[in-house]
Image (tube, rainbow, N blue to C red; front, side, top):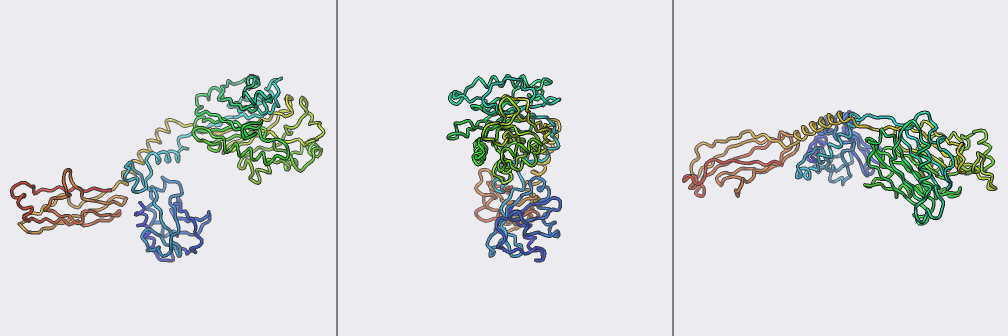
Length: 562
């Protein structure tokens, strides 16, 4: 197809010079060409900045070339690369003012023929089917809105002593899914050595008793690493649509393996939407902001789900836990004074996490709701009073819930001060999330339409020729007499082709010794034609066999196209 593109580019070169804008050569490094629809003009961009434009009068040149193909490919079709100015007259270059661009071959049609695919850089058919179905995904996909409850609680090694219903079932309606995370579930030495603790079962039973009573839930996955645990539950009516469940853990403590700072993650697919949930406990202490950032990046880098899916490779991503970001630049007493009047807006400006997001050091691109609740840390255990220790540290929103996804609505973001098990208060958020569900009937119908469309295009872009005559009668030919006749071969298809008269089975030549075909091979652009001369000549070498019947006076010629 690169030859065909060059054919159209030569037409462009024939246009008056004023039809292109001159662009200094040194401005071009790497340039991309995009087919724009509607309008079908060629727009050249360099480093995300427009540098040249082909006026509307040239659009018709490209209409035929792009045609239906422009609907099959994403905007980026071709790569353009600067070449030596002295080479600008070569047939595979396009000159725009003072600049010359080398056209790299690009896939513009498809086939199952391996030889043709290699020759013309053609996309495999299955790739185009997948791409076309992806482009029409909205036509066969229904979006359902589900409610996801996300909760996080640092329990500082305590056992559950009260119901968790004030935290887990505080809403009137039952959520469709739960993602519940704990930090510092167990602080015993045995948990670090043997990786086992009775606290896991204790807190799981308490969670199952505390979730919303108006629905039945199934456990999707429970994952724990030392003191950090993540539980994912889903209503029974959606359990059949869950698949691809996997979990992963990352240690960020000593040597990246030991310590009480970890990240655990669960990923799954619900209908046709991929979901990733991460619960983590990052480095503590107010001065360890950079360490927290590094913990975050370690989890991002090292957490991988089979088969080679990373955290970011999901449609919906929720990240929460004891992130441990503190308030800096304000004394504890001043912070508590603002909290006494619920002046959260003035206090949040001192929040480390918001600052790290702003300067793109950590959690860049993640969203978080408005912090309009009391900080969940640090309290005098068993009370609602701030930590009375001599450190007089400022309270902080250490326990956070963030997300990265499109079309997600956060319905509420809150803490739950009635739970006094720990020096932290549990935090929760209720989300309304989009889940894409395929309509099987619509999917099959659109799949059939795509296959028919691709079949038609494949047929349209197969090499096609027309021969002016299929039978040639030379009449009477005398001994040592030359006699010629002609036929025309035309390329009636949409792609360049190479024709060649080929040998028949068990024959050493494409024709009998008494017949000469010139030219016996050639190359034709779409719409081109060539005249073939067939010359017959009888001499001593061939006449004897013809006269005695050892050779026939009938010859069949076979033409191969590529």
